[in-house]
Length: 356
Image 1 (tube, rainbow, N blue to C red):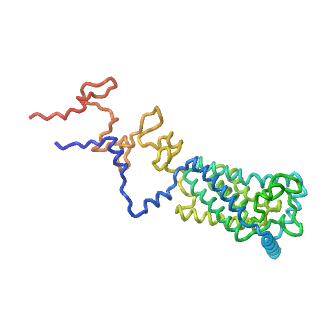
Image 2 (cartoon, helix red, strand yellow):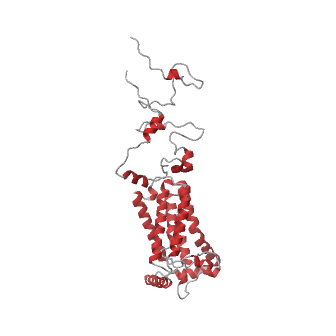
Image 3 (cartoon, one colour):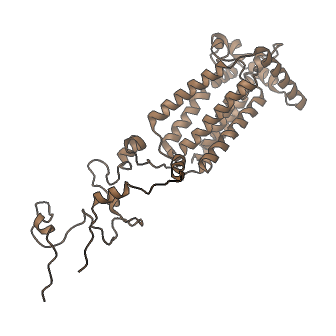
């Protein structure tokens, strides 16, 4: 008679906890690149610190007023040579319609942050596998913009010499620009190139269009950056070439994220692994769904048998030679306890020796 090998649930867990060591370093790189379920506390902290750093660096860049005005004159001349210097006409036309220009002032001041944060929250909740890569696009785009503010200080049209443009916030006394009114000393007024209103709005629009399943949401996703372009021009906060600069920064962000993850952010799996970290890796959602704890389910529910499944992917319901499922029913004869399990003396008894 051959010996029967019995593998307990605990033994299977111990074996799984000792993976083969990857001495080449490729395993670490794969783990860093693998989409993981984001952790809420970390994302809130990261966004807060990143925006604080961005504002600090942006406002610490020397304003260089004279150079910024010269660059604005040069850019305006370039647009006129191209036959595309339409900003002044749009600015004056919109300013003549009070309700429209006031609405645009508030659009400029609020949606830039509200929509961007809203898309981040939506990604976090509905597309956790794509969240980190898409967030990397946004953050790297913003980082490149800081270099643009330093290397190419630029006055917005409303601050150009000659007064040809109308500062709609000042004229209509609306709260809508960190560079106007009482807030002008809190922000660098000569950081117009590139436009992050465009960079962030195009990021939002592309993300919504690529991942939304409702047709009207896709349409709104495309309309949002188009509307933002009209607003930044009509309120004399940017030249249209500033918008081109914002799109170029965004292209860099997408290229960086694609190289790092080896795939376009929107082509990554929608779901993400919890990284086997329990509360830390999977967060509250991973813990309560049972994904952070192999072999355990929701409180009050019977655990899963997948932990004792074979390494070839067989489920618990299939036979796996050499492995005894401790939760499998035992139909052997003999005395049993109150819950139907065989007694210790019966379960530990050696198989009967055949008689000759």
